[in-house]
Image (tube, rainbow, N blue to C red):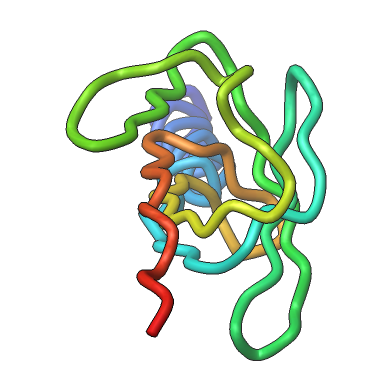
Length: 104
């Protein structure tokens, strides 16, 4: 019985750990619609509003220089690289603030 219990326990632990290993990197581009100290909301060009979590490891960059997450403002165009299981539960790794489009 013991010889069977160890492999079964190992298989069960691997099965439980599999969803934790399923995280993917995903890119979100669009316009900032809201910012808090822990989240940034981005409206994609398709009109979907996604909320990305931010933590101490989130890098915010503008013109190649790292800035504070406090520099994120509503209306800015951004491209964010997030990590998570789906678009609905992403944590931002990098957020790049795009320069305003030149007016013609």
